[in-house]
Length: 140
Image (cartoon, rainbow, N blue to C red):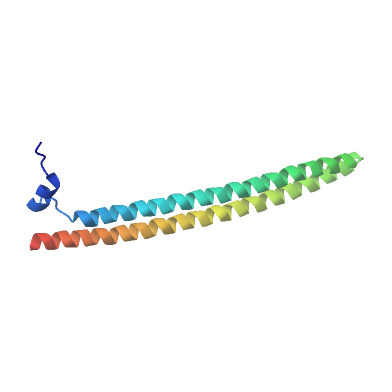
């Protein structure tokens, strides 16, 4: 059976208007950047989930302490004062936890943006090389 070799025919006839090797190199770089990005996102998601689990664990521990403290107070006035104190503590802890999670997410976003920017810059350079080689090829 006689098979036709399309690749050699196309390359010999200059039908492809750009350097295919450079194009493949560009795509390989893009895939590596994408892989790095996925790994970074997974790591950051794990960190965030771990932090949230720690916060939840502490909250559950505190709930049993709070219940014990509220049961030990006898007068209604003291209970109201204790509940107010507990609500203030919970609010402060919640705000601290939200800020901590926010910092972690902000750092994650910065790290992802850095990887994406680096990849885009490399792609633009490669594209400029591809265009200049193609223009040089046409001029020759």
